Amino acid sequence: QVMLVESGGGLVQTGGSLRLSCAASGRTLSGSAVGWFRQAPGKDRTFVASINWNGGYTDYADSVKGRFTISRDDAKNTVYLQMNSLKPEDTAVYYCTVSRKSGIFPYTPDYWGQGTRVTVSS
Picture 1: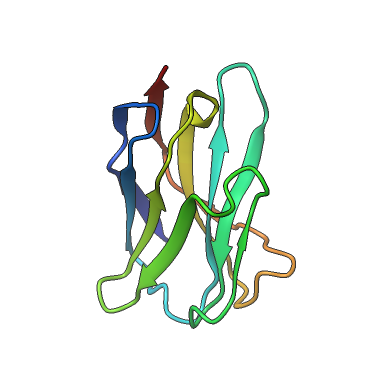
Picture 2 (picture 1 turned 135 degrees about the horizontal axis):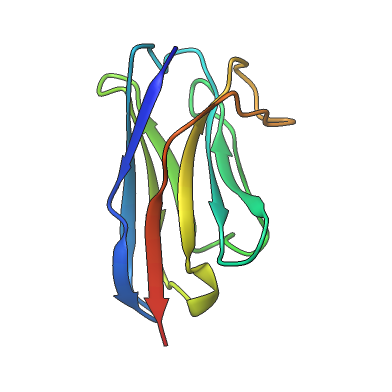
């Protein structure tokens, strides 16, 4: 079993930046693909980004391409999501996930964190 704890959420103005972190415990992230999802108020949870086991491949939702960057530091057992040029429509609870698989095509999350809230004011 793995425990995922997200941090770094908060309130930011349009055009600002935030970096989300996800610290894993109970299981090494090494060898596993990891990803981020988000759920906006009143909407379904949607895919944001994923990265394969060695960082060689990444995938992003069209809505965040060019603005968000996913990365991983297996030595720290941590995943990051750098979010730049934030828009009000990025407002959501962001969830860190880990897959039992190493690849991301398709990305299949098996473990979920509790989420961190991001609010982008206009």
